Amino acid sequence: MKTEKLLIVLKFAIVWFGFAYLSGICEHFNELPRSVHQSAQCDRASLAQNYYYGGFKFLYPEVNENRCIDGIVSCELPLTAFLAASLYKIFGYDEMWFRLLSFCFFSFGMFSLFLLLKTRLNEIAALLLILILQSSPILMFYAANFLPDISALGLGLIALFLFYRLFLPHAYLPNLNSIGLKFLFVFALSFSIATKTTNIILWLSMSGLILFSYFKGFKINIYQRSSAISSLLLTLIIPLSWQLWSKHLGQTHNFQYFMMRIPWSESWLSYKTSWLIYLANWPQQTFSEPLIFILFGLLFLPLFLKKYISNETWFLALFNLIGSLAFLFVMIEQFKYHDYYIICLFPAFILNWLAISEAISKIPSKLWWTKVVLFLSLVWAFQFQSNGGIINLRERYTPGNYWEQSHVNAQQYDTLRQMLLQKGIDRNACVLAGYDASPNNILYLLHLRGHRYSKEHGIERMDYILNGAHPQYLISNDSAIEQLAKKYVKMNQILEYNQLRVYNLIYSNQIDSAK
Image (cartoon, rainbow, N blue to C red):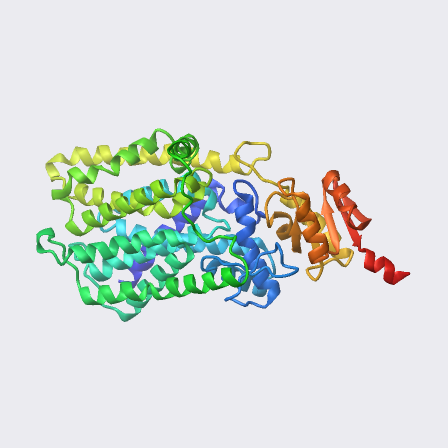
């Protein structure tokens, strides 16, 4: 039995990591934050950076902006960031560890999904479905990235597998009654929700299934129902506790970062416009056309195959689909500009595929040719989707391509960081970054703390920063901002690199003291 389990792990590892290497995912493990949503990447990576430099105060996550005074922020549970900072401390500061950690969380989740799928399908078909999912352009890019969404998805998939093995009856494998696995279920689901609030949809789907099991007409069987209820209730302790603590951090420190809010549209026209923007950009980044239309259509196929699907899987898939669509409709103002918001809605596709797999497994042997056709369709879908995903991943890391979209050249600022260190400018200094349209991009890449000024700010912000925080240095590539700063302080240029200028700021009281 142990040999058989090891063979399963080995088969999956060879296929999974082999694809990650050949597709180019591993090639970018050493990349600094760049490409699509570089600012969101720097925001999340800055949490790990501040843990690393600031003494691992888990309850007080910090970002780089405003750090001269206080960079503590409210945010969702920074589990991945804290663990990444721990790896930095052990192996040395290198963003590779953050990317690798995210990829490991995702990999464990996909392995759990593979184990679940192979109870309904043969191993090759299960692996093809896994690789089709991985080949999504969005998952290809964020599989090894700094955003917590991918780690939360991985943890959610682990919880889904354990929910099936612990609490749902099926003919494929015996159910388990292990305290250790129940603890792992609670751990995985609670940290998944705390890391990304969207994963509450998975919790609600499971809870809805248990609730409906009390009505005999639905014929839903739950093993150890009282244990399932207590386990689901326990999963809420960490997310709710962190939400309360994060609210406290927002009230006492900074509320502007990370916490999910519902951005209501100002009008029906604005709501409609948001949908048009979303549909024009992101569906084809979820899956390539025309596969996205096929897979979206398949979301509703189980409605017509109910008699071939177990009631447990059918209702679980239905509840998750309803929850995911509701979240999409409510949060469309966020979805229109954020491709990664869809990551935690992937369970809607996954449960749908699981339901259809159950129906396929019941096709009578005399219709064997339909299974052949379906298998060949999977092969085509994998080939088509993987080609699209690989191309898109390459485009997102190709300078000048539309999908690259970096705000700043990460490597350029990393080189400047080394030059600043030689000048004795380190994290103990307070700096003003200008021009930077994003809060933590330049400050994170330079490993510095301070403020930023951009063209979107008014003159009063320059007055607030210089006369309030008294930064020691200005780092800029914008002469207009430099001219504005000169109205408040005397500036002494000490360094220039590739149109980036560094000034020492001298205040009037310092001049008077010198006299």
